[in-house]
Figure 1 (cartoon, each protein chain N blue to C red):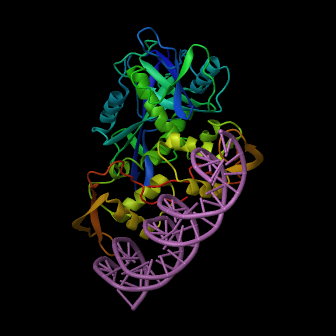
Figure 2: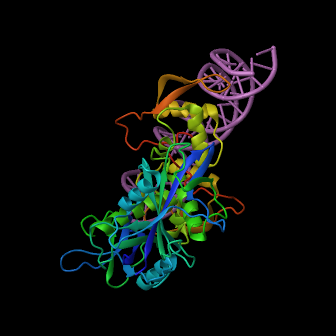
Figure 3: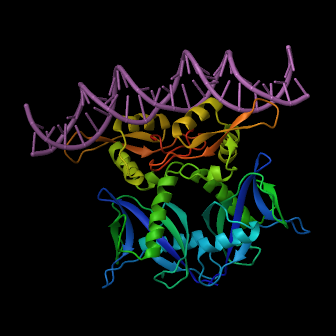
Length: 212
Length: 212
DNA sequence: GAAATAGTGTCTCTTAGACACTATTTC
DNA sequence: GAAATAGTGTCTAAGAGACACTATTTC
């Protein structure tokens, strides 16, 4: 019977980059994802939620299992089997004590198995953002359309066309304009929006702009 | 340390329907997915491949992990943790001894946990068919465009437009026409095609037709 | 000829992407 | 006014979907 651990891949947009939360590196320069050992009769989702609370001090508003990982390499806990979960938190959340944000991909910083889990987790984010509002959970409750577009671009890993993005977004009825404007910064103030999907629509798509 | 089992969700197109392989039902009317217990130091992909060979007598040409499942309900093996894998085999493959094909969703036939795994597996198939040639591994080496379209429709769970499907397929350079025709059946003979993606293209999309 | 299945040509309407513009702020 | 950022109007090319058709078989 393999001992099993649960790894948490906590993602956020930090300073305009996609970053993942890792524990402060040990003297050998290696870091690790936050993890916990699984009990004999685990409830995986609950264990992931508990770990998230323990690390961040609060729950994530979007979490998903990434998969199970096992290979010849070692998990920090020594467990033969790792179950990875991915969670997202709002942009520029401050890292809890003993942890830090690292830009993805965190090459060379993590062990082989956790690096694989991270890579898979980022793919999971890309794949899921279409049907689930996870992008919006990576932004504050109020955001500008430029911020939203940047979030999409960082998760998708490619640039989007501004006019097309806004046109399709308007048609999708995912967001609602607020009567407030962002005043900081150089140029013209940007209007704030909030996530407010039109009710009664089934299977809402969250990727209004796509090209292939 | 939880005991872990590996479940196999083996899918095929059987008599024009999407079906999953289950063991023959016991006297109480319940069936189970093929499964195996995991050793202390498992290699998950290898274990899934071994189980596939043991059940089918041959390897699947496309396999993917679905995820880890654990809840209050019981796995047939008694394991607290299940890792599910999905595999596909060509259409109308005959079921091995002691097993049978069941149309999805196999409601009421499986236990709660395996039913959840099956549902997730079918979603995995839908999500992956875009970037991977898994549809083609569910067909014989030669197939007609009508068969291919039906395969897409069964996996996607919706009808596709014939003219659009063929137009987009031609543009995708995924298949190559053969100089052979299917002669059985009533109407005009259909030309055979084979999967032959144009080389040098990166990130080939396998869902040339889509609407949203 | 009727029925069944395969396969195609054309039209329309939608829309992604390009381009070029206007709008409003700070410096 | 220049620079920076936000936001929009219009054109075009591509393509999905509709429709109607042709093609080739069995009965």
